[in-house]
Amino acid sequence: MARFRKHGLAGAVAAALLLAGCGGPQPLYDRVGGFATMSHIGDSLVVDIGRDPVLMRRFKGFSVADIQRQRTANVVFACELAGGPCRYRGLSMERIHRGMDIDDDEFDRMLALFAAAAKRASPDPGAADELTARFAGLRSAVVTHSK
Image (cartoon, rainbow, N blue to C red; front, top):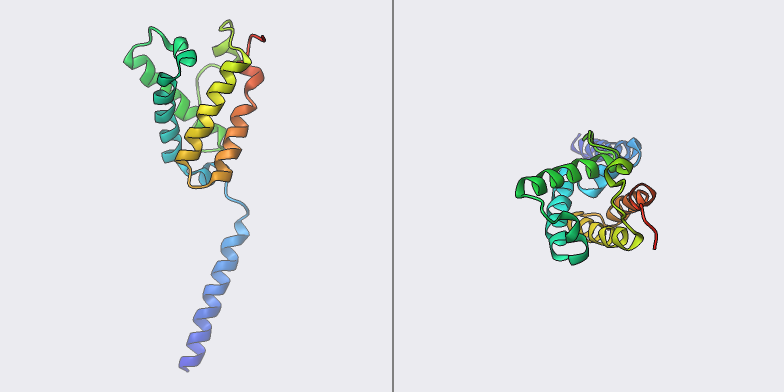
């Protein structure tokens, strides 16, 4: 009888493991680390942009409250970009960046900061790369000036 229970338990565990894999791949939001990762990316971008003289000039004159609002918008946007439960309700990327004359160099700088922040924050490097690729896909909506 004990032998039957032992195999029964092993069979149940094996079945549970098989069923766990039947749900399909996890959404990017979950693989990248969820909201904690998005929040970390937002915090990192505030610090990293502040250290980049080229990007920082875009935020000259911003108050602490302005920076906090920007950070929150970035977190929510990244969350939605990753397929998470957040819903970004701000202006479109085209509308926000219209008339700012952002060039490819500035976009590439921001992309590099985003990629580094995602790599530091996410437990899954592949998911961080995938999220960065989604961010990179925004180039045509953000770059408004070509050199």
